Image 1 (cartoon, rainbow, N blue to C red):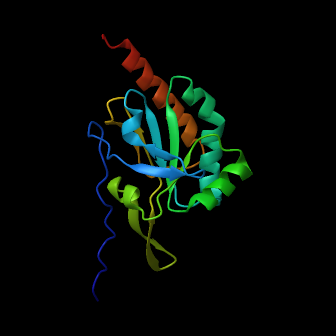
Image 2: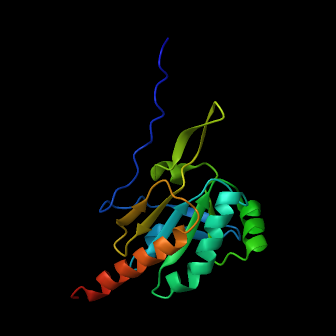
Length: 173
């Protein structure tokens, strides 16, 4: 009997590498470009689907931490494959205060190694791997969270953002 081939994870950007640039629309149709964030930190998190249990826990955690994360100029962007209408409903239902970006063709998720083959209940399909990237002011990857657990994730991101901002502000000009 043949052993099935393992499901391989695609490569994703590593710390120190330039973050793949992208431009995606939010629930209101506004375009968000990573290149426009030069000079500031950006939290880019990939989540499987709007208004599902784990994704809601993660998004509400970011909602609750957003004021503290944004205090130093850092912006949070959540990215998933659903369209603008789904994003608008999710944002409104939970009072989310940061942009949710629609990656309907999953090109950005692919560039970040977050569009993966998954096996669930014996079925194989493609979907989002829950990952978060902290992109620095120079548009390089500062930190990567793999295999994110939604509960408590935003608090971990907040601590990492604060430490990164402190290191950045302590550097000589």
